[in-house]
Image 1 (cartoon, rainbow, N blue to C red):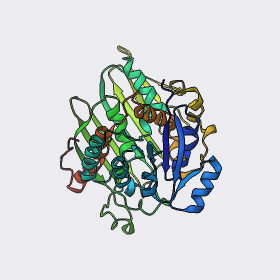
Image 2: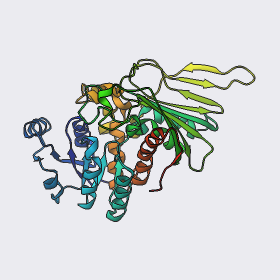
Image 3: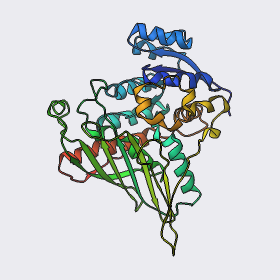
Image 4: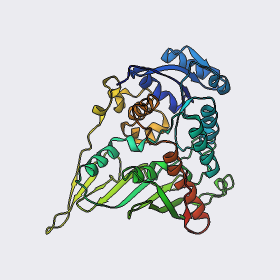
Length: 370
C-alpha cells in the first residue's frame, strides 16, 4: 500500500464529524481542515479533534492549495452545488447520499468529473455494510446460485429532522435500498416503474407537491434478466426503522431480519426436501481494512454514536471505515472508486425517475445514461 497521504477537509460536522477520527487514524490520510458555517460549533469540533485549520466559508476552503480532497456531509440541497464547485476547484470529492436531486444535476456532475480527472465517490453506506458484504461473499462463492430476484426497503420516520426533509418524496432518498440490488450484480438500472401509496398529512405535501406515504418501484437491470423491487417511506407510516436487502437465489436466499436485534435468515433449497430456513450470524469485515481503522466498524469506537442518523441507521453496518478506505485508495490510484460518478448518478437516478413514474400513475420511465 502507498505511503502517500491525502489531505482531507470535511464539510458539515454533524454526521460528518463521525469520519474525523477515521481519517486521523488512517495511514494514508491527513485530517487537514474542517468547515462549518456556525463558528461556535466549528471551534468546538476543531478543539475536540485538535484540527487547526478551520473554515466558515466553503469558497475559502476550496481556494486552499493544501487540500487534496473534500468530504461533503452537508444538507441534501447542497450536495450537487458543493460537489460541482469542488471538482471545478481541482479537488477530489466524497459526498454523502444522494448525489443530487435532479437529472440535470447528475449530468452536470458527471461531465465535471470527467473534465477534472478527479475522483468523485458517493459515500453510500449500505454497499460497505457487513450485511451486504456477507451476501456479496456468498454470491461470489457461488453459494446463492443464480440470482433470481432482489429486494430492498428503507422505511424510516423522518419527523423531527431538518426542515428540508418534511414532505420529501420517498424515492428522492432511495440509494440505501437501490444500491445493493445493483452493486451485487455490478450492473446499472435501465428503467423503472413506481407506484405511490397512501397519503401523508396535508401540511407536508405542498413543499415538494408529493402526497405519497410510501413509494414502491420495480426496476429493470441493464444486461440482466433480474428485476429488483424497492420500497421507501419517510412520514406517517408505523414501522420500526428498517434498511434491508434480500437476495433470492436458485440455491440459497438471504432474507433481512424483520426487526432490530434479530438475525437474518438463509433459506437453503433442499431438493427433494422442502426449503430449510436458518438464522445466521453476520460476521464483521474489519479484516479487509488497515489495522489502525478496524475498530471503527464497531459501535464502541463511534465518536458520535448518539447522532440521530447513526441511531436510526442501525449503526450503518460498520461501513464508515470501509467507505473512507475505498475513497482514499481511489484518490491514490490504487482502487477504483465504488461507486464512481456514473454509477452514483445511476443509483440516484433510479429514485428520481421512480418518483416521476409514481406521479404519472406508474408509467415506465427510462433511466438516462451518464
